[in-house]
Amino acid sequence: MTPPDPGLLSLNTATTRKQWGLAQAIAGCVRHGIRGIAPWRDQLREMGVQPAVHAIRGHGLSVTGLCRGGMFPAGDAARRKAAIDDNLRAVDEAHALDARCLVLVVGGLPAESKDIAGAREQVRDGIAAILPHARRAGIPLAIEPLHPMYAADRACVNTLGQALDLCDVLDPRGEGGLGVAVDVYHVWWDPQLERQIERAGKARLLAFHICDWLVPTRDMLNDRGMMGDGVIDLPRIRSWIQRAGYAGFHEVEIFSELDWWRRDADEVLATCKDRHQRFC
Amino acid sequence: MTPPDPGLLSLNTATTRKQWGLAQAIAGCVRHGIRGIAPWRDQLREMGVQPAVHAIRGHGLSVTGLCRGGMFPAGDAARRKAAIDDNLRAVDEAHALDARCLVLVVGGLPAESKDIAGAREQVRDGIAAILPHARRAGIPLAIEPLHPMYAADRACVNTLGQALDLCDVLDPRGEGGLGVAVDVYHVWWDPQLERQIERAGKARLLAFHICDWLVPTRDMLNDRGMMGDGVIDLPRIRSWIQRAGYAGFHEVEIFSELDWWRRDADEVLATCKDRHQRFC
Image (cartoon, rainbow over all chains, first blue to last red; front, side, top):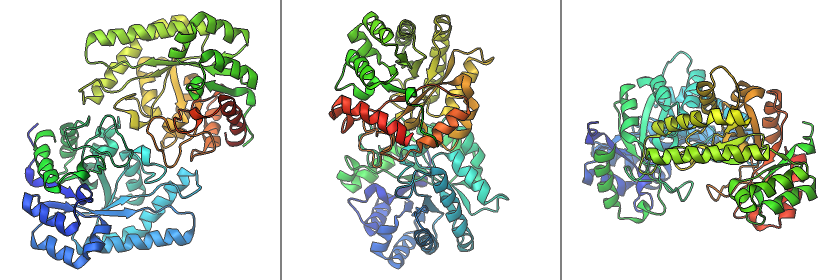
């Protein structure tokens, strides 16, 4: 496959979160000629929304997503309501940033619960509650299916097919404003991946996140690999995404306590650029 | 739900592998009134097949499965052939033990490979190569879908639906001798679980393995929980299995470096019996 357009590379700021705050990540992207950025809300709060908007706009960066909304399930109504209120604020922040989407990590089981079907209903209801506001704000909601190993504690939406079923239920007439974020780390193993990407199509493919799956994986959360260091056939998945009509950014998101978070962040960005060209 | 028939409890000997060899595990089952046992081949080799057959038969235990065949994908033809030969021997051992099935952990990606679709084809071909021998021996092959977190290094069959698709391809007329092992640890998260268990039906449900999913999970391989200590709704899954017609054993399989492998094995067995009644 032809190497990807280098202009499509985006930095999810989780990749450098141990080294850099958001202001530094913005400056880093500018320095390395990376044209997209996806901030996390904690870093956004730290920098302040208006300064972030100013810096990002001033440098002409695209915000390929805001991380993250979601975390809907909770043991009682008050906490479910609080989660929805927080998601509404996340939509507003995404709007201020002119983000391409708000990424939803939907949440896992409430404490003490073993009712995953119930948690999934709470997710459906939570997204339904914020979708009108998101549509008015012009911020598409990107449901990110997370790897099944996070089903209990992070996200009970665990396959692309399941995420798309949810889109069908919440947006039955395809009015838009709702879709999926495809992160290769979470979905690479799925035997239905190709067909579900095709099913999603251009309208519902809102974000594409890249990294790699290391063998062995030494930590369930923070041992993601740099593109090329693992077993994911990235060009193949990119070909499916493109064939489905996705022409957006390729957002690098690497949680790596043992490796990349320990390195000089400029080295990390240079490596992302190089690997994007050689392995994606 | 009514507690399960205590006579359906079986011990997968992985649960006590750090404390006991197979002979001790057999004696332990007898001492605790556990009527089923599922040995691993390394322990079987250590004890010797004939002594194991003699001891198991002498005590009237049922062998609810032999662990394990599989591991088909390999980088070259010679190694694929060696894997098939080893699986044929495993069938013979299962036959000697009068096992209810040979459990197949199908294998992951060959070294240096990123071709998971290719690995899945090798699995299909490997099972096809041993199925005639298994049928002649009267040993059903139980494809065990493993959790997607093991897709790269242990098994590239990762959902029950995928395993049943494989059964449909390899046994299109339902002649039998091929089915699935449902281990709650691997499949509990799957939104399609209920419908795929129903699809499998009595004919293809060959084994049911129980344990629990801990939150947090501290190790990707050896931190399984005792029934009741995690988030899996075991009675619900058992109800689906039973409704589909499965009336076989409930086999406890717990890999637990940090907890159960460090305890007195008699305590482990007593706990299995108690938790089986209270949480399954």
